[in-house]
Image 1 (cartoon, helix red, strand yellow):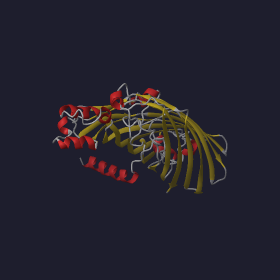
Image 2: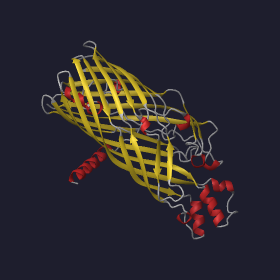
Image 3: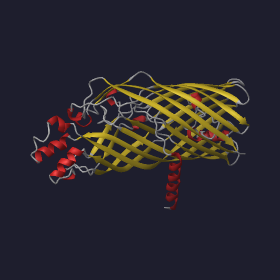
Image 4: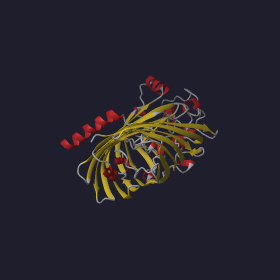
Amino acid sequence: MMRRSFQLRTLSACIGLFGCASLANAAGFNLLEQNASGLGNAYAGSAAIADNASTIYFNPAGMSQLPGLQVSAGANLIGPSFKFKNDGKSRGAYGISRVGGNGGDAGSFALVPNLHMTYQATDRIHVGLGISVPFGLKTEYDKDWVGRYHSQSFEIETININPSLSFKVSDTFSIGAGFNIQHIKATYEKAQNTAPLYQGIRTRLDLQNHCSQNDCNSLDAQTKTKIKNTAYGWNIGFLYTPSEDTRIGFSYRSRIKHKADGDTNVEYPAPTTGLLAQFGYSTSALGAPPHSRAYATVSLPDMAILSLYQRLDPKWELLADVSWTGWSSIPKLTIKTPDFPIQHSTTLYLKFKDAWRIAVGANYQLTDAWKLKTGIAWDQSPVQKATYRPASLPDKDRLWLSIGAQYKPSENTTIDVGYTYLQMLGKAKVNNVNNSDRLVFGHLSGKYKANGHIFGLQLSHRFF
């Protein structure tokens, strides 16, 4: 019990420090921004380069390359843009005639921090601790937009604490492993058409002439679900260094299953509650209470990375990366609300597929103090079909175009800056009726245009 209390106090302190950043930029809602030093290379070579303490996340075996006590801290400012355009085929829930607008820009800026520390305990053993944000997502639309029955706002916040250990088996081979304590918090807001409730009121209270059928069908309630959980996972890595100029790294991070709980609250429209109050009724009396407990289970995906670092000559370095993410662990997201007698659950059908990412990069040593970086990456989306492209994650395959620089003011200190432009490859078509659940979700049809910008800054220092 004491150990668990200590873990929860530590986690709470870290959440307060990091603020649980919440912006997706890599395909899906996986955040690669575990440092800013790799941003300029589009994170090519991430499991092999091992040039600062952030290797804990990408490959814990890389700690074997870091002598003494080292600390690396940084942040990335991420600004995605998601703009929807209705093609005229979209319809509201229960077929209402009031459709709504395009929703504005659903993206916004957020800061994603990271902190990593490594210590060389012996000639062969290194220990480390990483604190980072591995997953995040936030999309927010105008309240009255055409897809409000799918989503008005969806936010996922995580923080991951990752104590790690590495062992140098030989001069050319190292292994590493880590334990992950991961906290997740999610908030989901959407509109709920109250046509069935209002029609029930009209029938029960014999108010057939109180309002027109269309007016009754145009009243929206607002639902807001908030859930959270802490779960555990592990990661492992291997690093092969056949020469001083070559490093090959492989790492794997486990799937983490979250069983989150919280509550759902419904704010019913004033005409509905006002009408009921006139006759001494409430929404609860008609089987539509404003509050319920909420539960959801989601398995955040596992990930594998294979990386290469190659020094070509004293000036040039080449980096390459192939990674896989097991997004098929999330075929759907069901939020259970057992205290709602009519609708016990809400399901978002996603049918995510596993995705690949390929990146290449290069570094050029301009002077003893300055190194220039560049990189490019193709990032496959887990969203593969227009019929399952959710408004909460209007994703598609992406292209990364990255540049950066590293400055060494002293032998033990490095400062990295980076910038990446993200471009969605083509417009993302949407034809989503949420697995034919038109009555509750309506029909969202159109196209998304998306891009993004990432700015990063990292400071790394060796103390001894």
